[in-house]
Image 1 (cartoon, rainbow, N blue to C red):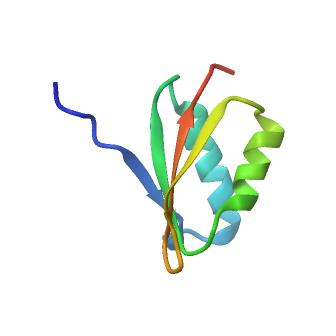
Image 2: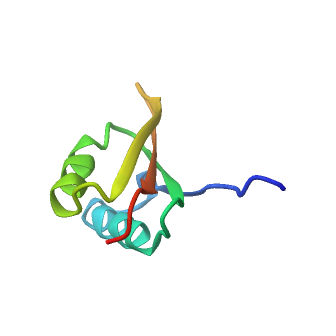
Length: 81
């Protein structure tokens, strides 16, 4: 069985005010066990804090690349809402 290619969102191309709403929409659409990759030009740590505050325990957060020019984070659905 072939591995499913991960979806991703490159927020560097999205207006700053639209970034979190788009990411939250993608996150809310995930089934348990699914994930996608966020690509950014800075550490998206504030997004991680916001996810933890609003959806405690529902999402996993794994750094795949940590700068200095590009950050890639795999965001996964750990449990159902």
